[in-house]
Amino acid sequence: MAETKEIKTETTTTQDSQIVDDDIQGQVHEIVDRIGKDADVGLALFEKSFQYDPAQLQRDSVKVRRKLDFLVLPLMMVTYMWSFLDKSTLNYSNSYGLQKDLNITGDQYSWIASALYFGWLAAAWPWNILIQKYPVGRLAGYVLVVWGVLCMLQGAVYNFAGFVVIRFFLGAVEAMVSPAWVILTSMLYTREEQPLRTSFWLGMNGVSIVIGALLSYGLGHASGLAVPNWKLIYLVVGALTTAWAVVIILYLPDGPHNAKCLNEYERVVAVWRVSHNNSGVKHSKFLAYQVKEALWDSKTWILMVQAAAFGILNGGVSSFQTAIIKGFGFSALKTSLYTTPAGALEVVGVLFFGWLSTKKNCMGLALMLSVIPGIGGLAGMMTLPVTHRYNLLACAWCQNIVGSPIILSWTLPATNVAGHTKRATVLGLYFIFFCGGSIAGPHLFFEQEAPRYPSALKGMMVCYAVGFGTQAVYTAFVYAQNKARDKKQLHTQVEREALEGFEDLTDMENLHFRYRV
Picture (cartoon, rainbow, N blue to C red):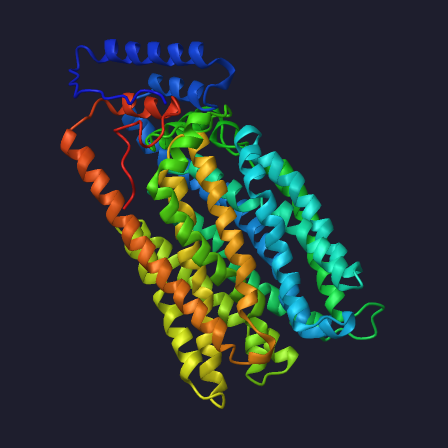
């Protein structure tokens, strides 16, 4: 393992500032000579930032951030919306006779729902390695074409086995987007900005629920078609996804270093902004020792337990919400229509708790508070009489706020893990555990227990408690580590600390790194 770098406090006067700048530039050249083609993709632009006054860079960074917010973030948001909508088509098509037409039992439906996450599970680790090595934007665009086609192919299956195969491969290709967006967000935004921006694109899950429900409701009224209504859902959503892929291929950047919406100077500013994350922009070289460090880091395994718990919640809510609502006594059309408020509630919850997480030392607090609505909703569903179906409906809507703790949990490896191979390893493991939980989630719902599904509700309650508890432990852990590093009083020039991030040091090697609490 590389030697931990401890840099003593330095003071720089106005007279010797140019000497220090020259020294820093010398360190940049030394890094390039030592690492060569594997140097961080943003290192050259970071070196150019030394030509400008930091005050000017700080002023212009606001303009660059706004450009990214209005031109790049929407591309990520819409793409993630299609990703969630493609997965959720099974949920909507189930209301229009899918099981009856294909002679699928309730248990088989659970396996079809899980098949997508088996594919995600199989592809989670390989995708994280590929994302580290290859351009994120172009990779996402090409993958988007494939998953749009696979979504349409779901309308061509005619039995249980065919559905399982298609859903498996759909999950395998869509496994790319979540870790890719986590990484891309960390490349474009500061650590303080990341949770809210991540909440924006994951909040599109709620928008996709609204759009999917309304689309399903509209397509449910179509009559005289050559194909059943449930097949039409797959064909329309898949075609729209494939068309969107063209936009992503043309305009989505691979990072701040090649964003088409920025000019050369703005790219310098964009890299300078994220240099203060102390984790660089992106290294393509795989470092085996960082894998070992990730595996021995106790914080990694706290996150894995949390990932499994939130995965179970995700799998259950995304696959069985319409079945639960329909079980309250609503028709197929009303079930589709009554799903829309759940999506709107998810958007509000994700954005509110994402905003709260940007406040100082509120990351862990925001995640813990965000599980409380889901717990309250489950308590209502377990105790209210079935005759109070509209109250039960509101309790079911509360489950969609689970998107808030899920996305805040996803941001923890991005914001609190430094070292690009280590981060890719932790993210890969995270999504393996998350997918494992998502596979298990639908199997908590036993057909004979409909419409209450008491076993599933109890299991979900436990998962919420585990999510809350692991975050409390994780927050206390990183807070203590920050305090221990503060006591050592190891500080130097901001530029030097930022430069350490471009050397691909891990969070345990770089003692200037501070965890977000």
